[in-house]
Length: 152
Length: 403
Image: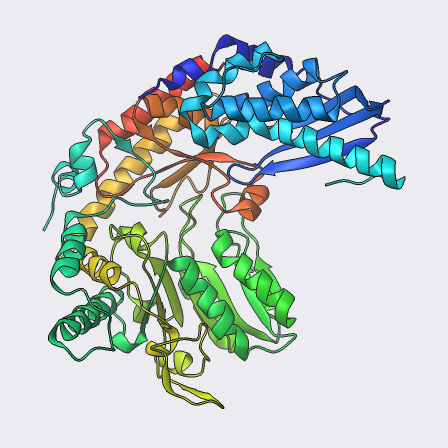
């Protein structure tokens, strides 16, 4: 049996505590709120897009250490990325958690979630902020194309 | 017969094989008793056939076993007749059955009164009925301890209340419902009463005649039986007035190209092949339960519950949800600011303590109690002091580990 203590590495606790990117954007062009129905965790992700890339990002995350650490990592790393890059990172993270791929090279900090492989019920905790960001990016793109601002 | 927790634990194969496990999640699923497992295996290897269809001896053996299971449930509930026992796939299915079949007798503007403390399974089917048929829903509020606040019951019922559907015991707070007060008010208003007994049945046999309700729902997996089976008890005259929920084989008198006539209850509500072996296994669990000294078990469960509450109360910052005094079920939920239930449960799992964290399918209740999620420990007849101690030691460890 895996040791859950190994899951709670200092890196996860530090990221969760630092809550990088926590807050609200005044000039958001896309936003999404996602829930984890298993535990009621919620992430609101906001992005401001400029020339197809994330110019600014903010999130409001209410969740466990894994969820908060994932959101904080996004807060540090997502600026400058476009939707395709975020899809690639999310897919790579998903594959890493499922044990079918190594740690994504683009975001080496994701290594802190490697021990979560052993706990499939916690994968959603790590992925929820990434899925919220993907949804926010889709909403931003839809708002740009329709001239409308939509929430999910 | 009075038995120790250790001797009871030995009768549960999973627990007997895992002496290191501190299972404190019986409110979600209780462990299965050996008698139930044996009965399922025996039935499937000696009497497996469909029921109420075949005339060969094997089919008649299946009919007898299924009929005997219905009799066992009737005795467990002190029902007036086994014909009032409907087998379903679980408590959720039983509640949905009432929402559809009794719901079909309601008219727009009729009222169903629920409480804020309901499990989602006793909320959502009624919200769906409201949206489908235009009934009104009203809600009994809870006090700060999660007990139903019955102060304004007559006003909440109004003039068109047809049904009060409430939990017998909260799956979050362990608060018992004052059923007698609700039944008295409902009778005055001409309303029926449905009791969700999912959390009550693992703490002993019930008496639907003494409770004086009209419907009672529970699940087999919460009272030491198999999963995939549940029960709806309904007062005979109420079941007789209800149309079927599901259509199919086994619930008809005659089908022609033009129309179908319904069988009487309980067959009217058991379309298709029922969960036969599961019902037989459930009956074995209930028969075993009916041999136990429930006063002694209740005393032990209550003592453990008090120990747990006392221990948790000493943890700085921890907030206990639910009543701290008076009669309560041994279900103890708590909130530790800054520590998420999923993280707590994960760390305690390392010490072989099985706890539940989340919203417990009771989001309206948690909102009323001012929390989004919480951690829950639930105690059943096979738990002992070592389980409570392991939880407290684990929480101390979690506080250090997660800080």
